[in-house]
Amino acid sequence: MSHVRRLLASLLLLAPVATLAQQPAGDPAEDRATGRPTERIYGEAVEVRVVNVDVVVTDRDGQPVQGLAREDFVVFEDGRQQEITNFYRVEGTQLQSEGQDGWQVIAPDSSFRRRVLLLVDNNFITTPERDVAVAALQGYLDQKFDGSYEWGVVSVGDDIRVLTPFTADKLRVRAALDRVRELPTFGVRYRIDRHFLNDPVRVRRAQRTKASSGNDLGDSQEPESFQHALRFESKISVASTLQAFERTTSAMVQAFRAYGDLPGNKILVWITGGVPMLPEYGFQGEGSAGQDQLSSKDTELRLWQAELRKLVDAASYEANAAQFKVYPVKATGLQPQMPQTDANYRSSGATFSEVALSSSIEVDDNDTAQLSLALGTGGLYLTSNRTLDSYESVDRDTASYYSLGYRPDRPADGKLHRVEVEVRRPGLVARSRNAYVDLSAEQKLEMVLATPLPFPREKGSLPVQVEVERRERGEVIAIAKLPSAKLTFLPEGEYFVGRVKIYLTIHDAQGNLVDLVSQQQDVRFPAAQKADALAGEFRYGLKFKLKEKGGYVVSVTLRDEATDEIGTAFSNVEI
Image: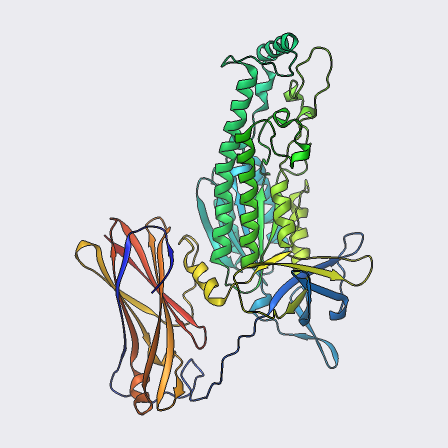
């Protein structure tokens, strides 16, 4: 038994039981047209893996460049040049491939279908800003969306809500956007309150202390000193910002994992007002320019700011693992970086001297998180004051591109690999994701199964059923069933042999993962009994205990190892 993940010590798997139940023989299985077994002899299985990289090429003016060929590109993985084995031009709904008679339009498959997931970040935006951005998107959908690709809508605030999964139905998308407007926003909560600097009593007190001590902020040890109050306010700000950004990045990671094995050109449009990466009064980090913009005067602040950057890196890693491009849209548009330019903060800044205004300028950083995610995944950071322009930029950038593929000369290792794409023609710039995580098909499936339940899960093509029986003291028996004819059995001497991978997943009433375990099961029967065996069903029994009281969702997933087809069935259990 392979324990893939354990979050709570509440599940104990006791005994798996697999059977191939036989029923009276009926009509023998025909061919595999609908998933039925055949008698083809398979040789040694060889896995052919292709790493696909979507590339957007622009000229010096930022305009997209079309009509390039395979020989115009060079691809590097971890610094080593790779041979480009697959090359396609994607222009809107048309897919072009190079053949013997030149370029020809071919029918696109699901790997090129565009899927746009909208993440509305209510943590770092105000209600008016959010509603204007949503209204602009609704206007864009009314004018431009033709149903040739898919949209999904997710919101995050104090919780994560999947308002609609991927769909080409414009009415469903609009209904989800209407629900977005009903949700609260928390942007004001996480923006540092510089009105604190307008307190004339505190300012004069700090100036008198400075004049007597010779220090910019004085050396008073009084609990109510301006210096201590400012530092306290900054720590409150950075702590609350970190908690909110953890929720935002958690929503991203869950979405990436939920749709990690979904084929297509996957895009995340992140509507936000900007994440404060330096949530402090700027003069507290004076002298920090040489220390990567982290506070140099307070160790605790510096550590918290480093944690914010780790969250950005984690989200970028997960996006590349799931092959998502991130397009942050700053709903506030362009704003001045220096708070001193706002008349409401007339006393804002580092200087309390009555003689000279000599301290360093206080600068906000509400763009690094968005810019880092866009650059790391091959997307764009869009900051137009006209939000409709940002949506149109996303549409242009994701509708036309080049798809390059190469075959790594090693097995999947689950590690991050750097990717670089260059254009041989001068004056042109190629933009793509800068890394990918080399996951096997099994690792991707486990990632999807571990995703919290608010994200919808595909049931797959295999018609799996599950029966769950609750016994005393939290003991549960789950029996998964599948018609045997839906599995692939290969001839091996005088026998037919099949292999099934079984995944048992437990989620609690809130949709959070409790446990995920897996088991591989071989099934074989004599060739002479083929007709009877295929007329029956495959059954797999699992006995386990749930120690904590409450509601659970039990799901069993079966994967045919020969074809990689899967099927999932769900059942609710109350302990």
